[in-house]
Amino acid sequence: MKIFSGIQPTGEIHIGNYLGAIKHWVKLQETQECIFSIVDLHSLTTPYNPEILQKKILELTIAHLAVGINPEKSIFFVQSRVKEHTELCWLLNTVCPVGDLSRMTQYKEKTKQFKKNINAGLLNYPVLQAADILLYKTEIVPIGEDQKQHIELTRTIAKKFNTKFGETFKIPEPQLPKIGAKIMALNDPTKKMSKSMPESCLFLFDEPDKIKKRIMSAITDTDKTIKYDIKNKPGISNLLTIYHLFSNKPIQEIEKEFEGKGYGDFKKELVELLTESLKPFREKRKELLNQEALIQKILNNGAKKAKIVAQATMEDVRKKMGLI
Ligand code: AMP
Ligand code: TRP
Image (cartoon, rainbow, N blue to C red; front, side):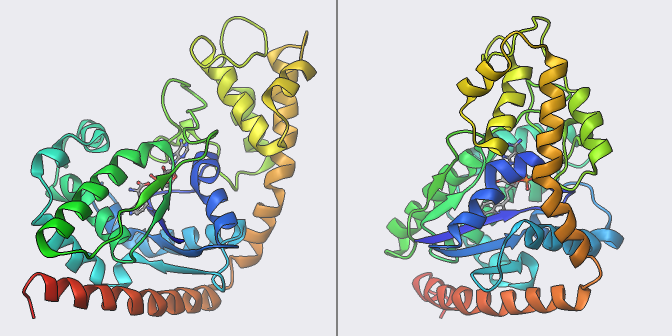
């Protein structure tokens, strides 16, 4: 199967990104044809600092390598270094209904969050995402819950293109983890954990004292039992989900273990579990921090490999659209 997914260099990776997406990419690369991209062009649609963009890309590359993305097994590259993404984006814009774009939840949320910068890129964002995916004839897109709607739109765009210009693109399927597709904010379990709200996050490379601080102060519910109940106890349910995914113990077993104990006891154990589980990632990241030449080489190779596939698709697309 051909797999594609991407992540924006907008901030550090949090455990939501990891549990919802990247953890599964690491596994998929063992058996499937995987392409993973740092989607820098997407990140230009919200306020950013051009002077530190390359630093963010470098940090995100290191983060991927530290958690196990293997450039020998996956194609791993930076989106803007393969120009075909922007070309295909423009061409797909001509088949994408504008009404669909304005109905996207992420667009609506971001226009609220960044009232002073509602740019056309923010509206067209999902078309670029469709280009990312379709350029590589992708079949499966492993993502978290929040991206499901964008993959639906990608499918609509692909179908419209195929009907209008002849069979060209595979129709990709989203792949969401059964548990962990939406890790909630630690400071407000009714909202998703999001890079744009650092207080909501536990970052993957946070040091032990930060893990302790974040988990011990995570918002829980007034009643004291450790029971999974998303509707009435979203805070403790979110922490139980995190505990389950890092320990591999079934949620019921965890509930039993903490029967008669309080939130404080549970949180203390969770701090320990997270500190230990994330330790190898912290260590690997530190090792990679001063190896910039190696990292750039990995990204150059990745872009070269991606270009070969992207150029072949574009030749076909240009022909089908009457451009050559
Ligand atoms: P982003 O941080 O928006 O670039 O997202 C990168 C990947 O992480 C996407 O596949 C998202 O769906 C996924 N993701 C982001 N936030 C969460 C979350 N809170 N829980 C689970 N997955 C998430
Ligand atoms: N929009 C995605 C996010 O914010 C990132 C992304 C861009 C992506 N292009 C993609 C994800 C292609 C999957 C496939 O998380």
